[in-house]
Length: 152
Image (cartoon, rainbow, N blue to C red; front, side, top):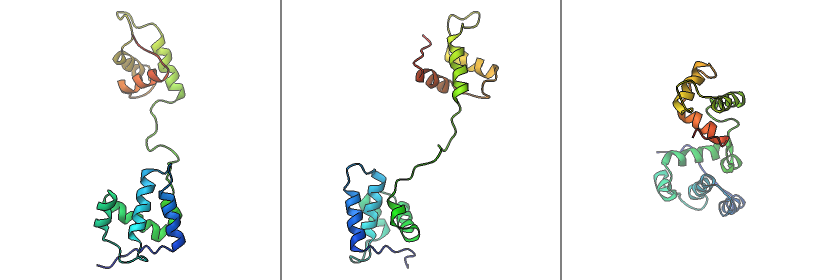
């Protein structure tokens, strides 16, 4: 089967990749991409198959394919940079105002018949007061913990 994407590194590019992979503060992901490019280089001889490269580098074969494809289509700088998301994939449920209202509720007097607030009781009350539509006990717990509040 013919390969669709090829890696042809010059001596300077190889040297740059080796220097990049030997840096102390480099992430594991970027280091594995460097190793994939070095192994897939066709200028130093016949490269091993993608399955062989994936076994040697300890990654899946899809990562090898994607790294080679990104190098061939987008260039070396794209492959060797660490990708940072502009915003998290999932928006947080509790924002600043919501958090303040939950903390204020936890600091207030518990309802009649209860000696203190529990996470379940807080959860029910937050939904009842329509602070948020739905929320889990764990979210309330982490919100309170972030502010060093304890229900005990």
